[in-house]
Length: 302
Image (cartoon, one colour):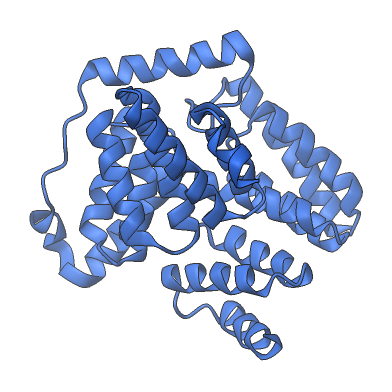
């Protein structure tokens, strides 16, 4: 296996890293991204490719709770290609976990300048505003580092790129601008139908409604976490992990996604991953009793 891996191109290594990431093998994903980074750097720098690889490795570090390395990789990614949405959000989440709230606020706020509709940036900004008000009082803004001004060209390029991605190959772009109003209404209607079915404990039918809703609006975090709850209820634990992963890509500090992913990992007897999920959750919300209780149960099983 090692021989074969060494002969892979950097694009194949990146693809293999993405697959490992999707299945929760974050350490293996980071190794594959590291190999890809070495290959690209050897063959002469391509700033955009390198920026994506560093950002992807940062996501793996963030999932593993290695926030300091995540910050480093995101910073390299942003030096290569300034104002990248994903590295800004990932670095913001890492700073938040490290309780460096001012720096987290700056990153979330910078992302909002690029696209004001990003749920993770909106939620992150709100959380940091609350934390900083508690820590520094009402004059907290005076203590912030400078917030970069995003050039208009960056905003326009981002908007064009997301439109082209959608038009040319139908790829779902996690951070694209909010879909049209009619599409959002349709997605919301289907989601509410799913919620009504959950109340009746008709989980399989609810899963169908949430799946239809996500086709219309793949950026709605609560639809992923709601469908994950249904998957947990029908004992489809791998699918629950996948949906929580989708939600956490959009908002790395989402409490429901972290808790439900921990529940799924527990049922899959992946106690290490379960503990990692709960520790990530407790960094965001230290007094969450449900997470504290589940952590005690899992630690007794280990």
